[in-house]
Image (cartoon, rainbow, N blue to C red; front, side, top):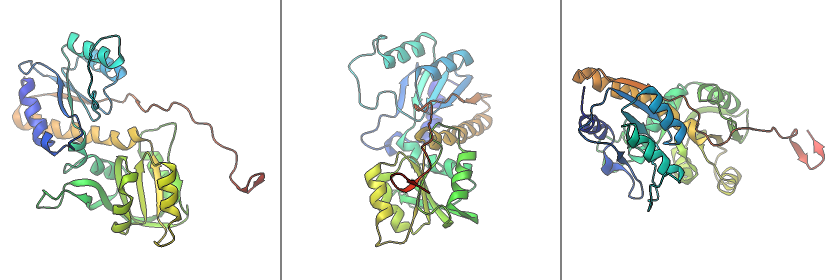
Length: 288
């Protein structure tokens, strides 16, 4: 069996820590470098439910996309929920490693996995990494559909292919408009609107779209109409877990490690229910 330090070195080769944003908190959070690793679990969030799953699975290493301590801390007391996570990990000899924005911009990365889940053909990064001479790394992806779909059909595909959440897929724009090209970005994406406009795509699928940026974006008459598809943050990033697990599986086979690699199916999206509104109307009290 490989040592934790060997597995971490392989993961750092896939997602070098130096490619993370300066504000990010990636890398190994908990773990003894010399401990042996035989089973690995991939998940989006390092929350207690996922840590308990890792313990039940008898995993030696938990790899998550989201950091445990993104904004730092002054305590790991078990009286806090993050401290309890740390105590559970250490008590059960489970290491924790985080790949966040360094996985977002990797080739392949989070948005490649999202595109793959929707059967989109990746053309190029939405925001290229200037340090990549091959122009393959970067944030988000510009994609082509093998066959045109309407916005409604693309939203239905996203709802079917991505993990189910209470939110589902929200749409802004003409549901019957034709989509041939689409930009995707796993996680929060409304800071990328200028890049989406410049890409000349028909639609943008991402998560966490806020009211004012989205409203201003679709109301901008100076540009051609463009549809927005807003999915749950967790759902847009979960496909990366399967991609990352497959990458580690390949490394394990190549090195003769015989690691057992798993992907968590635990839903850690914070929203648990959805109540549909009444039928839409042209004005208050005048339903369509």
